[in-house]
Image (cartoon, rainbow over all chains, first blue to last red; front, side, top):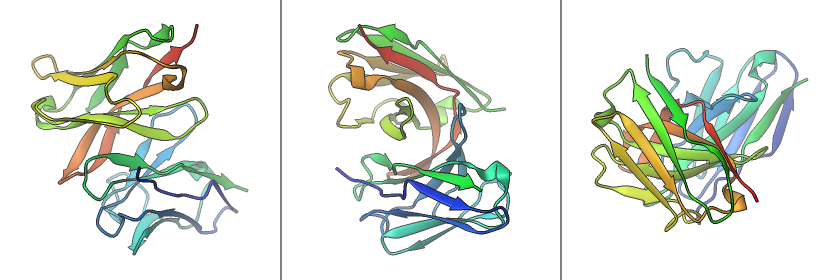
Amino acid sequence: SYELTQPPSVSVSPGQTARITCSGDALPKQYAYWYQQKPGQAPVLVIYKDSERPSGIPERFSGSSSGTTVTLTISGVQAEDEADYYCQSADSSGTIQVFGGGTKLTVL
Amino acid sequence: EVQLVESGGGLVQPGGSLRLSCAASGFTFSSYWMHWVRQAPGKGLVWVSRINSDGSSTSYADSVKGRFTISRDNAKNTLYLQMNSLRAEDTAVYYCARARGSSGSYYFDYWGQGTLVTVSS
């Protein structure tokens, strides 16, 4: 079965840049999407189609893609950005959707 | 305002059944593909199933194939998930989500608040 791999945790100080990676064999063929989830809340879409930002999402959130790895970058991290972040994509055939295991972002 | 409200969760014994509902409002429900995503306590998001806009096409994760059935009633603006032969590992918060995208690449722009399903004796 298809898998997306994320680091379990990333820690940064306020104002620094956080980078969260997501790796998967089908990522050169399929778009990646990113979600932020805070405790007790439903996920919120923060990046779609690798690098597009939905309306209402701060400009400090950006996405990029290179080969089999996509990256969510949060510039000038704020305390409110502390959350779990999940990448999501599809397998090469587009039959199933897959989430990465999630990355806990800690703001020191 | 787009709203998705799940219901139907609860405590069920192993081997039992449960039907989840997701009431949609604030958008043209019949125009969108819909998905179910679950999250076990303290764990990550897991995609469960999807259905196309008119209900003629469905897809399932291997872990639920043959046990779960997704359906929809566009006249009632409601999405369903019939869950049979439930196992302890099906314990999770179940979210319904509206999908955008095409050609197999979908993302979820709106989510419900989730409904908790607990499978235990």
